[in-house]
Structures are given as C-alpha cells and as structure tokens.
Image (cartoon, rainbow over all chains, first blue to last red; front, top):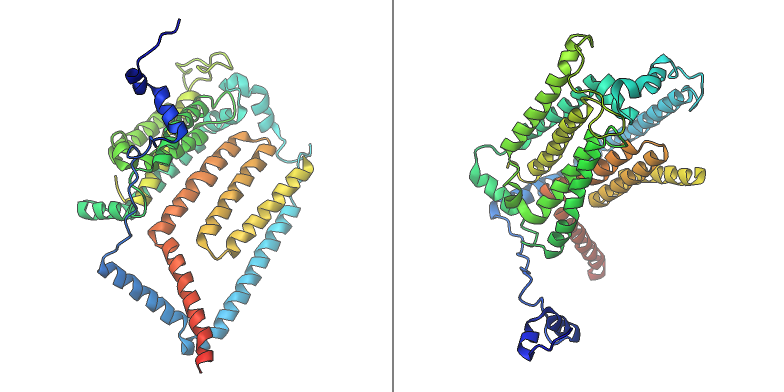
Length: 321
Length: 101
C-alpha cells in the first residue's frame, strides 16, 4: 500500500536530495565537507640560515677545485678498489653457493633424524597442525624468546636516540613542523581508513590466533596489526591514537608479554624439559584451543611486534608520545 | 610456473641493481618496495606462506614507511626539488653566458 506524501515532507526525504544532486540543482557536499587550504611551509630564519649555511659548506667542499685536484687520484682509487672488493665478495659467495648440496636431494646433510622426528612426532608432541609454528614455539621456543627481546632492545635503542625527553615546547614544535605539508582532515584518507582499518585488524588477529592451525603466527600477525595502527594514526592524527596507545601502554604491554613468555617457558628450560606435565592439555589438533602453550606464546609475540612497529613509527615522526 | 619463477627472479635482480643506481631517493624506496612485493610472491611459490605474509607486511609496508619519514625529516624530498630547479637555472644561465659574450 502506498500513500501520497505532501510536497514539504517529500523535500525532507533522502530521495529528494538524491534527485537534487543527480539533476545538478544543488551540490550537497558544498560547505559540508571540510577542505582546508594548504598552508605554505614556513621555517624560522635561524633554521633556514643554518640549513643554507650547511648546504653552502657542502657545495664548497664538493666544488673546491684545488682540493679536488689533490684528492682526485685517491677518489679514482677508492672507486676502483670498491668495485674490485665487490667483485671479490660476489665471486666468493658464488663459489660458496656452488659447493651447496643440490636442492631436494635425499642424501643432503639436512635430511637426518631431527627433521624426521619433527615431521613424524611433531603433531602428537606439540599439538600444532602447522609444523613450523610447532617448531619455533615449542621445540625452539628459546630462539623465539631471543627474537622478541631483540625487537624490544631495538625499540629501546630508538627511544634512546630519538626521544625528546621532558622538552614539551620542542615536542610541540616537532609535531607542528611534521604536519605542515598535510591538510588537517583529509576526507579521502579518513573514509578509506574507516573502511579498511577494521578488516586489517581482524585479519591480523586471525593470523595470530590461527598460527598453529595454518600459515601465520605472532610475528606476521603483529606486523599486520602494526601496519593497521600506522594507517589509523596517519588518517586521524595523534590525538585519537593517544587515547589508547601511549608510551606507558607500550611499556606495560611489552613487559607483560615478555614476562608472560619468560615465565611460561623458562621453567621448562630451567629443568631441561624434565618438567611436570603442562596444566593446559594439548587438545584436539585443528581446534583453536589446542596445542597447549603455543596460542599464548603467539599472542605474546604478536603484542610485542605490533607495539614495536607502532613505536618505531611514532618515534621517527614525532620523537615521543 | 617455472618460466614465471624465472621472470620474477630476473625482476628481483633488476630491482636490486636499480635501487643502488637510482639517483632520486624517493624512486629508490619505491623500487625497494616493489622488490619486497616480488620477494613475497617468490616466498609463496616456494611454499612458505608464513614468510610471504611477513615480507609483504614488513618489507613492503612498514620499512618503506619508515624510510619515507626519514627522507621527510632530513628534508631530502624538498631539497631534491630545489636542487633540480637550481641546477636547471644554472644551466640556463650557463647557456646564456656565451651568447652574451
């Protein structure tokens, strides 16, 4: 059953506005979408002077003819020696490669009892369908612990080098100069980010949680989540992300994840794998809640990697959160 | 599939040489990105999807983004534009000078 509506109420409906837009009577996006004109890039005179002075210094050094005449032969020598060194290294590596055993040969030294045991007993002993995850998070879990710590130490080094500590004015200046070239609220980027970021996050979580069932694991999933966070930060700015992710959050996340990993695994390292049987049973292969500790360790590694990626980005851009 | 693999490997070598030869730093990073992308396809063909996912996310995504910020921070992108213009101006001046004499 259809009923007639009055002209005035029809004007309020969406179909009327669509019709208006379609016939070109009125542009609906006029005055609605925020489009700020780009501000010209300005830098203080002092900085500009310093920059030009440095450039001039560099150019003077490059085009200093007398000096160039003296150092010219040495530069040619450097080039010749570097090319020779490169050729030597490349030929050395190629010779080394030629001594490698052929790919997939049954008599290779890698085909001993170790991979045989991994392939035959891996599923029963670790409970992981993806044997690679079973290897790196059960048999060789100590290596992965070291890898997570390497990431943590790398972040510490970046924090030491790039953090502008306790200088709020400088931090604000850095932030202002950082976004000088960009429009304030980029509508296209924000709309795309709104649509794309949730699937990226969900895919990252799926890759982490399904690490023992299929291809994936903590490292790849964490990298995907970190990339999603970076996209979100680019679209919506620091104000939005700092509501849920600050330096303090990162510290506690990393501490929690690495501590959890350490506590879960160092007991069995300490006892030389002669430990009491794990509280978490292996479960049925193929279910998410299977394979004992591997799921928890995957989540720990994923948290560390995602935090590291995001912290790197923020440190490079702004020098502090 | 074998031919496809050889094409990809050739592309990899070309990319690796192009990165070191390219003068524009921005172009070099873009080429490096494509290198990572091709590498992730090769990992997929070598039947290690774990590595393919990581390579695509880290190599083509996060690393290049970090490189881009670094270029921006050291004003390499702006400097490149200025330098190009200045060189062109200098060239024009240099060409004009003999005519005046």
